[in-house]
Amino acid sequence: MNIILMGPPGAGKGTQAAKLVEKYNLKQISTGDLFRKAIKEETKYGVIAKYFISFGYLVPDDFTIQMVEEYLHENIHTEEFKNGFILDGFPRTIVQAKKLQDICDMFDFKIDAVINLDIPEDVLIKRLSGRRTCEDCGKSYHIVYNPPKVEGVCDVCGGQLLQRADESEEAVQVRIDTYNKQTKPLIDYYQMKGELINVNGDQTMDQVTQDIYDILDKI
Ligand code: AP5
Ligand code: MG
Ligand code: ZN
Image (cartoon, rainbow, N blue to C red; front, side, top):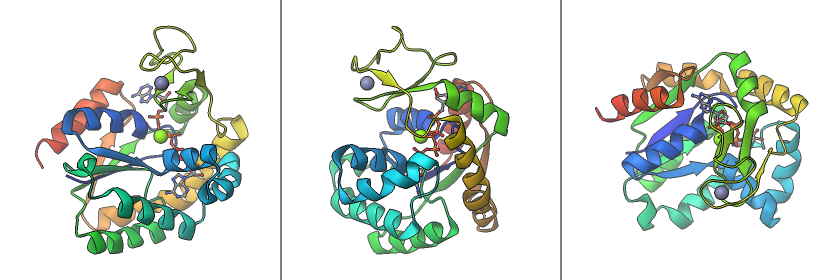
């Protein structure tokens, strides 16, 4: 089963992807995480992505698509992918969505569901301002909604919990505006293709998870 998980910044894509990985043993492909790893390792993708990400802009399409293609080439035949994958944060533009169709044909797989986490803007800001991310394993927390057992320390690996570089008030606003301009049109795109499934993202984490399980259990 291959899924696209869509939604604005802070909608809960990463949080829900982790739940789907647990239940269905799918592989999560987060382009945001791939870029952050590239930045840390100072690869060619990292050097360019760093600038765009820190201001809250999208990384240019050509570059993003090239990274995703390369990643799939190297990983799609590995054991981790045998039950399918979740695309978290890709595609994010119409150009990327069209290219994804070509990539599907190239690697001979299909997308089974496009899940859109629907959520009002004021909730996003609260979620992003309280998020803390483990610098070692990438697990995300929220200081109010999903706190770690010990403040500032990851429950899973003991790593330090930090705010992401794109979590300043200005960058968050740019990310939301960028989403509205460049990514929101994908909702209509997938709706017209008859593939879109909306989920109310403004519920408790468990309730959102349950709604997604109910959808995917029928596939
Ligand atoms: P990316 O890393 O994908 O960031 P994003 O889309 O802005 O989304 P987030 O990861 O911030 O939020 P999320 O939806 O995963 O929410 P989370 O589960 O963490 O991308 C970063 C940047 O990389 C982009 O800005 C761009 O520059 C670049 N990039 C990435 N992909 C690209 C692409 N395809 N093309 C071009 N550029 C690209 O939850 C948020 C918080 O809320 C957490 O604290 C969580 O604990 C809490 N929370 C979650 N669910 C709930 C709930 N139900 N109730 C209460 N709290 C909740
Ligand atoms: Mg995320
Ligand atoms: Zn950790």
